[in-house]
Image (tube, rainbow over all chains, first blue to last red; front, side, top):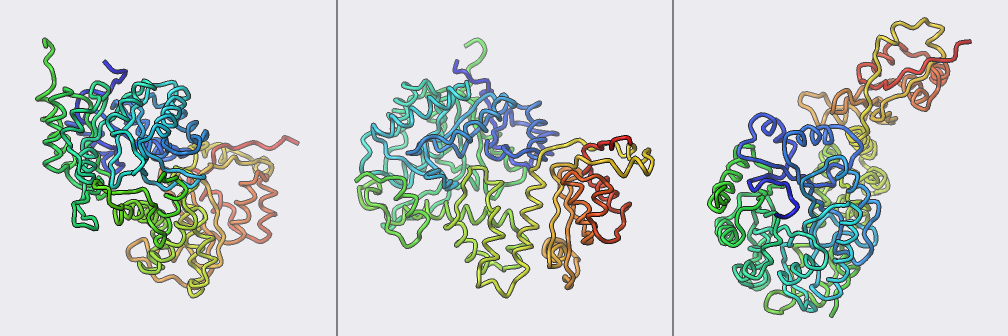
Length: 284
Length: 250
C-alpha cells in the first residue's frame, strides 16, 4: 500500500458554503481536500472550520501555489508555511502540481505549463526532493491540463511523471479530467495516455468539469474550469482507468459556480458507484 | 526554441505581446489563441480575486470602470505571494493615484475600509477577557491600566462618510450616504467583522489604547470630550479586549 491514509472512496474539494451540510449529513463523502493557501491566514473562520472538519474527516492538503516547476528556487517562506499547516493538521496526504505559477516573485495564480525536457526533469525532481525533505513527508504530484505544447519537449507526459516518481519516490495524483482535456486539446489518445501511465504510483484521482471552446482552426479546445458536472466521456475514461488501477481515493473538484450540497453529493455518489465496481472484497 | 518563464510571464500579462515562439498545438502549428487560455485564466482570475475582496468598491465604480481599473492594477501589480487572501493590499493606494477617478474621491477610502475588514477577518484569534474584571475595578485603578486589544481590532479614519457608502452598496434599505466624515471601528466578536462609526476623539482614544497607553493617557490623547463608557462598551461588545493589564499600585 502507498503511504496514504485517505479512504478508497469519494472526497470533495471543501467549500465553506458546504460547512453546515458536512457537519450534519456528509454522506457519501468520506474525506475532504483543501487548497493549502486558503488556510495560511493567522486565524478567524477559515482555520476554525478547518480544525472542526479535521476532527471528523481524513484531510488532503492540495497546494496550488508552490510553483514546483518554477525556473527559480522554491520560495522558502512558502515552503515553511506549508510545513506549519501540515505539522498542525497532520493531513493524510499532501499534493501539488506539475506546473509553475511564480516567476521573479510575481505569483500568477494559475497552473502554467512546462516543457518536458531533461532539464525540467532535473529541476522538478530537485524541488520535489526539497519539499519532501522539508515537510518530512511523501508528496503526490498531479498531471496538468494542457492547452498547448512546447516544441522543445522530448518526453511524453506519462513517461515524464513516471521518471519523476522513480527519481524522487513521490506518488502521483492522476486527474482524469485533465487527461481528457489535454488529450483532446493536443490530439493524443486518452486511453493510450492511461495505458502508459505509471498506474501503480497513483494514490489519488481527481475529477472535475470542463468547458468547451475552439482554437484558431476550429479544433475543440477544452478548458479545465471546475465549474460544472463531470462530463460523460470523462466518467468513461475513469471507468477505463479504474479497470487498470482498482479503487483509489477519488476527489470531485468543483471550484467555480459552486453548486448546492445536493448537487455536489450526487457527483460524489456517482464516483462511489464507479469505485464500488472496482473495490476488492475483503476475501479477494 | 526554448521558452523561458520570464517571456511566458510577460506575454501572459500583456495582451498586446506576441505569443512566445516554441509554443504549439498538437499538430505543431503555432499556439495562437490557445495561449489566450492562460492569459484569460491569469488576468480574469486576478480581477475576480480583486472583485471578491472589494465588492463595494466594484459597485461604486460600476462594472465597466471597475474592469478597466482592475485590469490595469493586476497587470502592473500581480500578487507577490500565493496567499490570495492578502492580494490587493495596495489596491486602495492605486485607486487614489488614478487621475481618471478624480470624480470619485471617496473610492480609495471605501477600498481601504474593505481591505481593513479583510485584515480583521484573517487576523489571529484572541480569547476575550472577562468583562467582570473591568466592572470590579475602582476608578483610581482604572486610570493606570492598559489593554491588550484583540489582533482583529482595526481603526480607520476617513474624510468621507465611508461606512455609509459601504452600507449603501452592501446592505438592503441603507439610505444614500450623507456628507459627514466617518471614522470606523472594526472588531471581530465572532468570525465576521463588525463596524461601528465613532467620533474623532473616540478614535484617538482607541488608537492610543491600541498602542499601549494607559486609560488615563489615552483619555488625554483624545484631546476632546467623548463618551468613555460608550467607547469601552464598543470594545466589550466587539470581544476586542484580550487582556486587562492592571496598572502599578502607587
